[in-house]
Image (cartoon, rainbow, N blue to C red; front, side):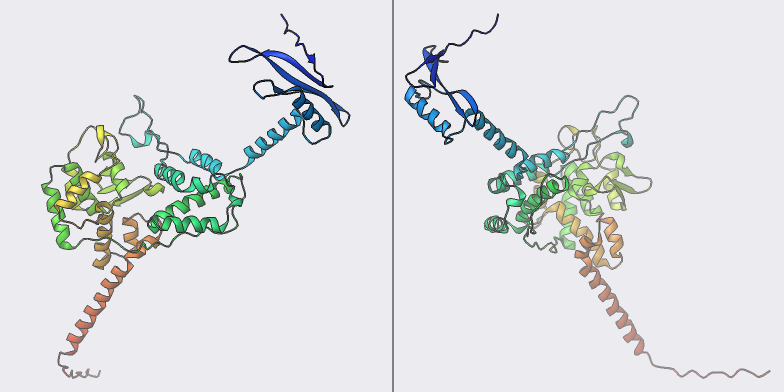
Length: 414
């Protein structure tokens, strides 16, 4: 059955009509007004409003009709076309908010290891595929939503001015450390660079300046503090955390590397630990000493593949509370960051010993370039200077020895 034909009624105004329809809520009858007119040799017949909903009357409808004939007001179709053009233009605008949406979707978030089949042994590292982890996603999300979105979400990169960046940087520096502000501005820079690299937008025409951060400062423990820390760990009831602290001191491994460490990564026969993709880079191996061996060989094992597992045998994600207790029991400074500081302590001891060159130290710390290792160069230089002083002292001692004339015995002729 076809749709019933709509009946239109004339009004006292030429070109103004109405039809009767029911109101959606009450079901009462309501007039819907239409106008018919020509403009630029083109005929139009279109609704202009409802009796109650839009307070439309024949007189108002007639005024609208006159305005559209004179070109003072556009037709419904033209209005729809303008709105669509605006929507199309908006959808093609690569604002910072839109770039962030693409950026976070392209960056792999924390992956889930696929279950191994019956044919693949669970401990066979090569048979497990793992999606790369975007480890800092939660931090980036927080930085974007709290500090970037309010100012830049609706702007395209080309609409960002140097003054916009300066204002944000100065505002954040009033309440945050330079390192934190640097992370926020660096994230904005990465989002824009992502858009440029993907051909989505044009980049900004200036460099985003980030605060200078003094990264040379290191946290180290004195020999007495190291002795007290080891004693505290040996007496601790929480062997999982205590041994993790000791391995951090004995190997210099990073926090994340210790959390991800699995038993299959430890080669007791050759004395090496495999560090898989340190900071997302190429997998490396580092040797471990007898102290580390002793801890690992006596470390309690669970059903978990991880050496220092977290809740329910899963990979550990936090250690703050437990490690804070060890720091307190060992009477270490409140500002000392245990795992971060123990890595520095490990590096500082080797550098100041004068027995390890900077290239070896770089490899032990799995630094990508020598730049990061250079923070310990002054300790290495101090050891070399001490060696030069010792050499000078030995020479001075040698000079105090009385010189004895040596008479050369003539060789016989013939």
